[in-house]
Image (cartoon, rainbow, N blue to C red; front, side, top):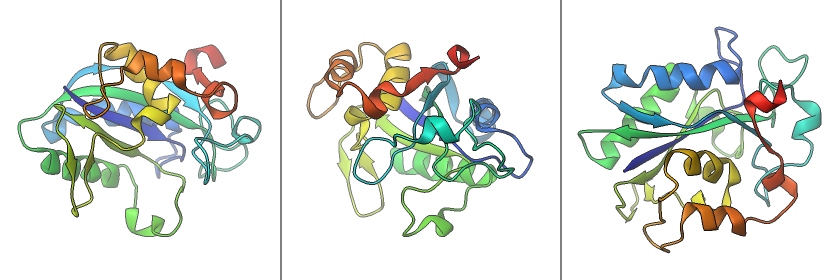
Length: 198
């Protein structure tokens, strides 16, 4: 199973809000030879801020689309729109990661401008979460499974929708038990289905 995390909290150059960017990006996968096999629903989450899983003020400063109110270019630390997709891919993990970065660029993300500014708002964020259970940690910028996968509710909730039987390749922890183990309150609780926000 190959899993990709998808997120956006910044409008693109065409003015599309994050809730439009995420499905548009997924719809474009086939153009890059990435086969979409399953996709979760869209979730709205507080951004990840330094020192924790997420921020406490995102809900007040951002609208339901994931962009800050009154800011035509989206929000700095505005709410994210998140999803997880299962995909098919014929190449190796490094080739898929390179392709995901190409898709990000085509949607307006410039990783070079983000250096030293982590976390930063993103037009599109595509994270390779798991690649057929492979365990990789090298100097080419690829770590698998994704090191934060078990600590992020905005990954685990949508992941549970499409792969409830998934288990972490290293720890063996299941997605459902990992969800239960998340701290209550804070960012873990500030996660909502987009449809529930109206």
